[in-house]
Image (cartoon, rainbow, N blue to C red; front, side, top):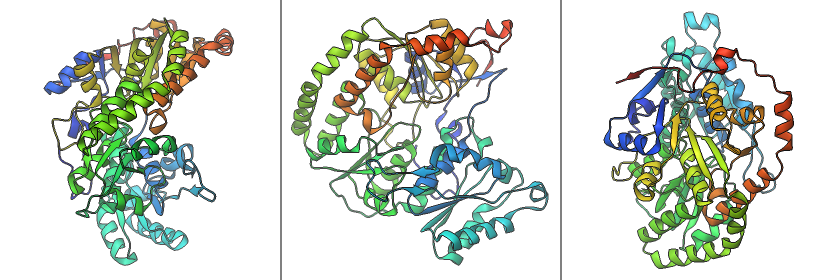
Length: 490
């Protein structure tokens, strides 16, 4: 579906894309139902705490160079910000590149919920502007500002004229969506409205949209072989980075959750081709993505040459690690795209995946080209990839019961406590990489060798498990993983 930047806010993923947070079955069934438009979400009668779209919106906005975020919320809503972007840095970091993220709360209080807080918001924005003088200001809305009906968009319009700089609303109420990736969409929508300009030009640049520049130095030489320069629209991207990105030939994102809305906006508004079906992780992913890109710019032969050289360069390292990993079983618990990207990588290395947990699932993305399927569905169709899978929004108890059921050799995860659960069972956890650092055969070799090292000594986890006392009742401890599902919503 097309991105509409004229709207002041972006609808949630549940509304736009039919995204879900409840499912158990197989990836092939999940992808087939999603492609057919008949995927249904499962509801829970009991659930543990999850995450919030609000904080993911403001942490992304706060990292952008030259910006300031005013969080129109109770002060506690910005409290988790320190976990994400209290300090951002470019990677690799040149001297003096450290940047302190600027997030200032309007500190909505009890009386404000009765009498309104727009005057307080105006005062906060003006004071913040005088102190920091940013190039642009974003006002993030919250559950409380939405419940009391604050007209934040009108304040943004007034202050843009008064201050002579962009003041843009980011509609980031956590209550709008059970999928915290909707916060990424709110960030992308606000940044796109502020920074995207249709230049009517095309340069020899290609965009990567993601969290971090980590690994940029390894990817740039590969793209240079195709005559392309890399632009990273990541945590510290400047206004100039966005302006140049509007004239690029193509974009891709680290995943469908964090990057797809901005990539789609670049295609819709600026005509920059968005590649979403093949993500360049591991050998197979890199080959398909790089060939797609090479064909698109008329350099397929050059792309094939790069692929052949990279494959041979890391062949010995990968084969050595595969011998160590033979017969191992890995449990995957990751975000929507990477759960299945890592499943494919593990299969490339000969590692069995008894189960993969995705923290949500998008049956489609915002790409205006509807022939472009999401990466997981493409893998199912092209590679016959399948795995027993479930979808939960970081439901700790469900994930714990699944780990207990399958008792794998290692957990592949990133955040949301699956690594802590693993230690309680004496199982090592691999805190996996995402983004540019995982790209290509070099990324596959890095993953393979680090995974082999992780499994070489598991004594620490075994010692932790000996001293762990589970806090759950016997009844809850013996609950089946998906017994909390109570109904299927149409």
